[in-house]
Each structure stands twice: as structure tokens, then as C-alpha cells.
Length: 353
Ligand code: GRF
Image (cartoon, rainbow, N blue to C red):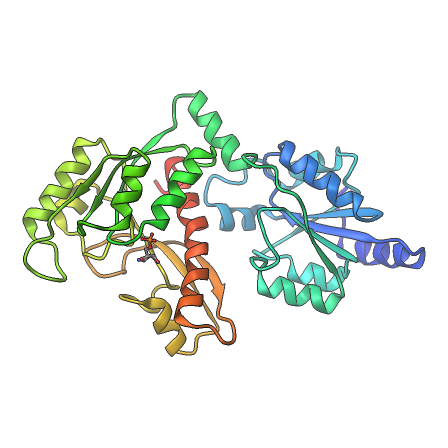
């Protein structure tokens, strides 16, 4: 049975009266796997009863994209309640479980080991502090995730392995995150080619280190633009590599018609701000100068206008007191490294057709 907030407030009170502790955790739990089972067992072991708050169908869609959830909230609840470790299930709307935490005031808040105390959402952290809940980060089961399961299922049915062309001008940490996600099985894709307009860019070196075809394309005479001949060359190389999705990861030039036409609706970019705020260079610094309380990153479709195409998804990063451009940029990059592989996976699964 799915519980109400009132049920759980009562239950928390009763446990408290008996000197017992209520553990709370939340998530989508769309396709249960052994990682979930172990994590829920561990969470239950921290106290005397476990409540699992699951995202409503709308909020899963908001977080994971169209096509999710695979199982409705009532089905997910039924599966979870079949586990020995789960005592109660409640459904919540929106991206965060903050209002539930505030109302239920669990003794212990458990979170999966893919988080750290630092990457927990600041709003949730504040609510937990107010509720007096102890935060426990649980051990992580590597390679076990719903996304990895979906990728493996796609591979089985011969539908996986989208071919990527990655374009970049910088150090290539985003490329690295894509390659890492492919390697650990969370992303069913292949980086077919990496192209840069900077001959000694780190991204080309990283590509070489991973045995990926790496190509330097001379951008031409003008400092900030890509010559038409270079645009054509890029298109040609992407085509020859049978690329299905072009990913701009720190590519500092504007792509134009030959590439955009040839890959219509199949060119995406990651930008280090919450667009449409702070387009262009050093967006994290722009956010600091503007005194923004929240910054983040955006994945969007590419048009021939700077950082202007349709927004696919954003991830927020709180600006902290004493942040320098470097410290804020580093946290935004961490968010980029999660967001970009996730969106590529969703694109491969046909979420944006
Ligand atoms: C990222 O912050 C990206 O958002 C911006 O350039 C940076 C590229 O970093 N456009 P890397 O080359 O992937 O390390």
C-alpha cells in the first residue's frame, strides 16, 4: 500500500516514542537491480524501519526524459514492497523530496553511493539539517544501474552503440566522461571520431590514448571563426566515420550549414551556464560577476547562433560563498560529466525524436 504523509508522520512519532529510528531514502527505482536491493538492505540496517520515497511518473519523466518511467509509480511501489527491506513506500512529485523530508523528519537519510556529502542537493541538505536527520552515504555497486541495464538490453536486441563524433578545442574532460560511461556499461555508444580546431588540444591526446581516431582540422585564417572549407572538412570526416550524433564538448567555434544541414537535429552542445543566461566565453565567471546564487550547465541542440538552440536539459550547481571562478567552474564541470553522457544515452534510446 502506498502511504500518505500523515501515515508516515504518525509512524515516525511512534518509532521515536519507542526509541527506534526511521530511515528515509528516495529515488526513481524504475527497473530494480541488484544494486538497488543491496543498497535498500544496507539502508534498512541503519535503523528500525525504512521508507522509500519514489518519484511520481511525471517527475521521473522530468528527470530522465520521455520514455521513462518504464514502470508506473504503483507498479514500482508494488515491486519495492515485495522486498524484505522496505517497510513503507510514498510517492512524491517534483525533482526533490525536500517537502517530504521536512514533514516526516526521518532520523536517518540514506543516499546511494554515487553521491557524496558534497554532491547532495543543497536544498535537500538544508531540509535535512532542519529536520535533524543524519545523512548516510551507502556503498555503491559499480556498473549496476538502470541506465546500464537499458544499454545492455539495447545491445542484445542489436539496437545499441550509437556512433558519436566529438568536437572539442580544450582539455577533453567531457570526452573522458563519455568514454568512461561507455567503458563501465552505463552508455551504449562508440566514439567514432574526435575532431579539434586546436592542433595540440588535450582532447586529441586523450582520444589517441583511448585508441580513438583523432583529427585536427585547420580552422583557417580568422581567429574566432571556422572557414567554410574547414566546415566542409569536418562534415566530410564525420560522414566518413558514420557518425550518428555530433557532440560539441568545449568546441569553441560556431558550426554552420554544411555540418548542421548534414546532421540536422543531431548536433548537441554542453555549455557551462543555465542558458539562456551567460552565453559565450567563461560563463562561470559571468555568473559570479552577476551575483547568481545558482549556476550550472546546459545541454542543447546546436544552431548557427551562439549557445542558442533548443534546451534539452540543465543541471543546477549552487554558487557557494567564497567561490572563485576556478572553484565554481570545477563543480560545474563535475555536473557536465554526469549530464552529457546521460543525455547521449537518452538520445540513443530515441528520447528526442
Ligand atoms: C566545458 O566547461 C564546456 O562546458 C565548455 O568548455 C569546457 C570544455 O571542457 N564549453 P573539456 O575540454 O571537456 O575539459
